Length: 554
Image 1 (tube, rainbow, N blue to C red):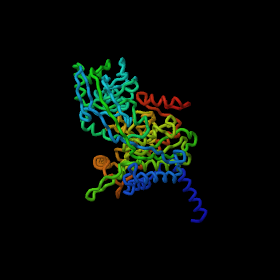
Image 2 (cartoon, rainbow, N blue to C red):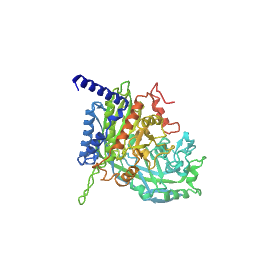
Image 3 (tube, rainbow, N blue to C red):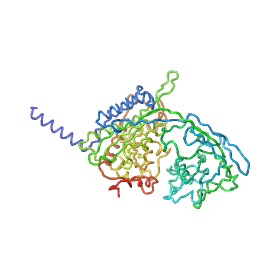
Image 4 (cartoon, one colour):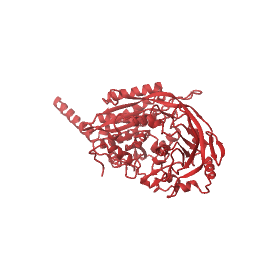
């Protein structure tokens, strides 16, 4: 081949490559690059990536360096880091709970019959003396469900006692809230805030009937929270906690009621009832600084609407190390959870930087700390947003994609609840994938609330969390079995490692879907909201009311 022909051939190849990039920009995300990130982040050198350790230093520096290489700018002024401090309850003192009924006093034992804390208002003694108690059903006021447990009752200065979850949990009626599916209204935090609004001094939630009291109580040790974060550390009540079902049954019978309190609370005409007893207790929490840690944040400025944002999130942390015994592995490497999600979002960042035309909206890349400690990094950002949440169009989360062959069917954990669905479906179709339709039901095991999208959801920001889960593209059903095997045998175990033969195909596929989803939204000009029947829509509407000229989905 002569020199002019060679030059012409090179030009044609370059033009074809550019055209291919325009047609399939997701191909910038490759198996090799995904594998390299996971192998590095899940190596023994990173010590299980626990916040506050040398593993954190290595991990956060790695992420900073990768963002710099991609020319992704620092997301927090001139820094890639958002620092915060985590505290823990170091010591909790609580007297027995003394309840007086008809001048007869009875004491109930802390942790045996009830659990209470000072709502993390630390180093402050709380003393409750002879305080009236009120049974307020589920403690829910929800106009969109035509439900108000607080109508015609004054709880100011009283202790509110409420049932676990929401009415749908007890009836399994999908038309009542969401049946067995959890809702925001059923959360402990929501119930506490509703009681606070009405002037209650404390709230006690009755034990979950499906959970053993000892199991429930074991989860209450040394809670962690973000230092000086009022919205996270305190609900404003003097105290809150749980009571056992036997204790509630005693309270109920002592009040002279001979009907079932749960059935009574489920009746449409329910009115809160006084529990004809007075309660006394004293408690105090002492806290200590636990660790200093950081989120990692980068930003790629948009070409047309740089002050509107698509936020990609993934938690960089895992659970560190354990004491080694008889030569056993001591490092929780966290290859799938969540080196996979971290790798995905790094490769999404790379794909955006390689576009011929940059996205119209800005793209934020948020790698959070302390997800394994209670979503604390995401909670911190959501309560201290670097970029306004009413200018954040959506959050796209990545957490634990599976090392198997490419899966056609994708579970979007938030599918069916937001107006993002149509845009996610468009992105999936470009990869010949489908989004599993959950018929308005949330995934089991409370997954909806168990990753970093959720703190943004609580603030009203619509979210996406895609996980390729079944129907392998190669038709080999054994690939689905591998997912089950990981969940049963390797999740949160030292065996969640990078290994010879590690197959990143599905992780890459999920990263490509995340990229295309964000690209679709970034260039759409739309502001998708929560669906009309969602409890988060009102929160979002209030937030967006401060914006003007929004283009919503019709």
